[in-house]
Structure formats: structure tokens, C-alpha cells
Length: 334
Image (cartoon, rainbow, N blue to C red):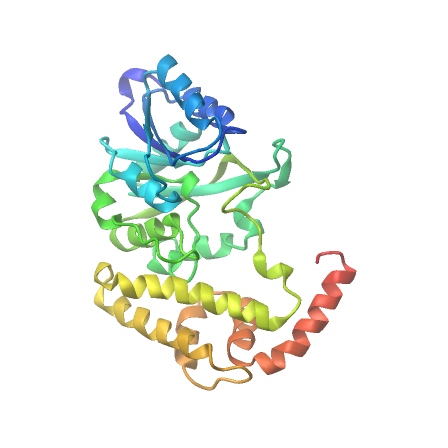
């Protein structure tokens, strides 16, 4: 690409104790085929050598702008701080332990403009700490690809759970006022989930299936491919987690209901009440099935049935769960 035709893009990177992989990530961003960038980095009171690394890059490359927080914000509010620093029309998000392939920015810009989109997100290659492939496709592994393809033009894309991985995003900054402030009360609700749902409501979202990030998984990741429920031996544990996650999601929606169209506001309230009611139903539930159907009708039949049994018929599900767990253990998948 010719530098003369490139508009400047803000790339937002939140860091915290990231010295182990940080240089590799920053080098991969600064060596992109698309050169006109401003890499804005906010460090959240790191205790390792992260700040020294950032100072080094800021000295040698004037495209790097750094901020060091004086008190810990947490990663969501740190991303919120970064969004407030955006000055250009387009911005991207980055994670401190990944590696960007050389054409990531270039291809993201091309996709955004060819689709006339307001936000583009993509797939990732999941790798280990040494960048060896674990899963060729993150979205296939997490069973997201079908839903993304079917609901890319609907708020349903990111409503029940998150399909938008933040580090793949390029978006238009004019929608930032719709995104801010980012809710941070629930540990089950992350910033890219909120960005994805707001943009799917107020803007046009497009999907780039090509993979331009090596998405590193290691022992220190805060968010990744780890499926917590796979570690549980009892259905009661899985059910409690599922209910708490949904209460975190729909509780966040209800607390910010003014951000949603009126029709969705009503669904937010009914959904929160439904999952709140389920906490006291230990064996069977015969209430609110219409709400369950409205939420899960966009999912696969297997996902629908599994979740219906877990949520509404846990007494029946206990026996089925024991059989399933035993089979998976024999297959060494547990």
C-alpha cells in the first residue's frame, strides 16, 4: 500500500504485567504493511518490566504513545480509558500476548471499506506459548462460526453470548459515545461483548473469516479458550455457572437498558427475571419457557436441548450428565 493513501489508525493496547510476550506483539504491529498508525498503550500499574519496555519503544518510534496509570483500573476500565484517547476515524484493539500477521491492518481496512461497515471482526489461529498451532480456527473451536454467518446483520449475533473477539476488531470511532461507559460490574461480561452488542444495534457489522492473529494461550491469560464447565463433575456446578453467567449478561443489559431499543429492553428484563427465578428451581421448572425459546431459538438443536435440560429439567439432566462425563473421560476428553 502507498503511504500517501493511508489514513492514520489508532491501535489500542492495554497492558498489565505483560513483559514476557509484549515485545513480540509490539514488533508485529509496528512492522505491518500498513504503516500510518498510532499505537496507544495504557499500562495498568504493572509490577514487572512492562513499563521499561514501553518506554523503550516510545523513544525509538514516534508512532508509539504511552500512558502509565497511577492506580489499578482493571482491564475493562483500562480499555475504556484508551477509547477516550482515540482521535482518528478508525481504531483497532490489541492484546498484549498475541502476534499480528503482517497484513492484518491492511486487510482489515480493505474489508471495512469494501463492506461499508462500521465494525469488522474476524477469526484467529489459536497457538501455544511458542506459537505452535492448537486450533486452526478459534471460532470453529468455540462453535461460533455458524451463528456468526447466520446472524451477522442482527443484534442476535452478540446478544446471548459474545461472538466478537476484541483483538480482531477494527471500528469507526464515531460510535464510541454509544459504547461508553463500558459496564464493569460483572466478571462474566467483558468489554468486547459490550462493543459487539452496541455496534450490532447501532452500526453495520461485518465478518472477516481470514485469520491474521496468532492468539496465544498460556497460563497467565485472563480470557481465552478455556471452557470452565468442562472441569465440573456435577451438573449442579455447570448449571450454577450457566445461570450466573446469564445473570451477569442480562443484569448488565438491564442496568444499561437506556442503551437498547424499547423492544429489546423488555426482553432484557424478562430474561434477567427468568434466570434469577431459576436459582431456586433445583429439580424442575415449568415457568418462563417462552423466554427460553426466544433466547435460544437461534442456536443449534443440540445446544438448545442441552441448555433446556440443564436450565429447566436438572433432575433428568443429572443422570445424563454422569453418563456423558463417564464417556468423555474414557475418551480422555475430561
